Length: 247
Image 1 (cartoon, rainbow, N blue to C red):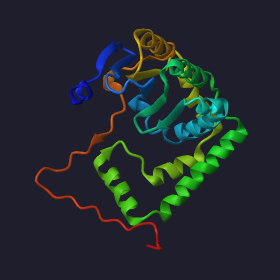
Image 2 (image 1 turned 120 degrees about the horizontal axis):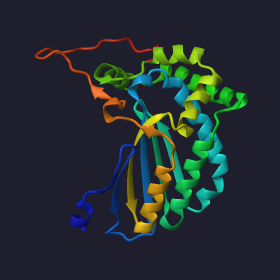
Image 3 (image 1 turned 90 degrees about the vertical axis):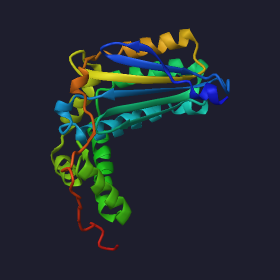
Image 4 (image 1 turned 45 degrees about the vertical axis):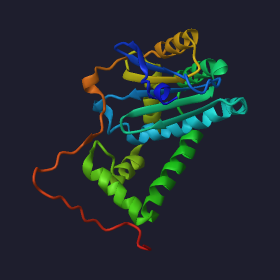
């Protein structure tokens, strides 16, 4: 059992656009599987994408949740999140239906033209509440934020996000989303497939990845969050007053 669990994923695709790993389920034998896909964004646009990508994701998630509501009753679940580095997608469910589910969600993402004015307004309300709640967080949460800001690069400060949110437009959000349907946009995708997939399922998921029309992004241009290099032989202490006056 332990030997089977310890077997690492196998590299099954290594192209200029997509790299895919596969780890079959050799232990539990359940008819379930997981597909994880990460799309790296180019480092040149990392700052410009901060708030527009969040608004796009909120609007997209609302659409997909409504469109695939019934799928959850069939045991099919998806999750989409954005990070500084790019876009993360995860699909979980019974393997006999999961491949078609992945294809359908990716097609919806390609076809999503961005939020309407009302969807943009709802997403902005969420972002404003998120930014407002920052000032009411617990001291340990603020300490963790300061640690990320100090030791990681790139990383968004709350001041930067608030300033960008005041100026963002629906056109910027639409333009961000249009990249996922453009052959001129460059991404780099890495995927992990795990579970009860046969070779036919594996090939079908790879075709779904290949159908995404982005161009190859050279790996040296990927947005990579890295540890900041502090001066050697010196201690560094960051002292900052927490924003929550109640604590």
